[in-house]
Amino acid sequence: MSVPTSPPIPSDARAASPSERLRRELLGWPGVVEAPHRFGGVEFRLGRRELGHLHGDHLADLPFPVRVREELVREGRARPHHVLPASGWVSFPIRSDDDVPAALALFRLSYDRATAAATGPGHGAGETGESG
Image (cartoon, rainbow, N blue to C red; front, side, top):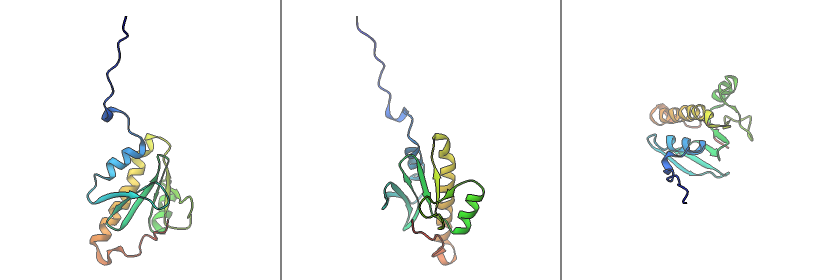
C-alpha cells in the first residue's frame, strides 16, 4: 500500500523571513538598490546615500540626523545604535514578523529624507552624520 504524498509547496507560497520581506519591499521603491554592507549584512542605497542596513533577520540600522534619532528614540520607535549610540544612527530589533511594518516605516522615513535631500536646496549635504 502506498502512502499519499503532499504536493510540494511553491516557493512563493512559503512564509518569507523578515529580512526577505523587507528586502522585497525596499527593492520595489524607485531607485533603491542593495549591496553587501561593509560591517556584514546587506545595505540599501538610494544613489550614494545609505538608507540603512540589515544584520540578518534580527536587526536594522538606519542613519538619521541626531535630532531625528533623539525623536525616534524618545517615541520608542527605535533604539540608539548598538555600537555608536551618540551618533544619528538608530538600531531597530526585529524579533518577529510583527516588527516588519515598523522597520519598513523607519526605512520609509530614511527614503523620504533621501529623496527630499536629492531634490531640495543644498541637497541635504552632511545631514545624516553617516558613520556606522
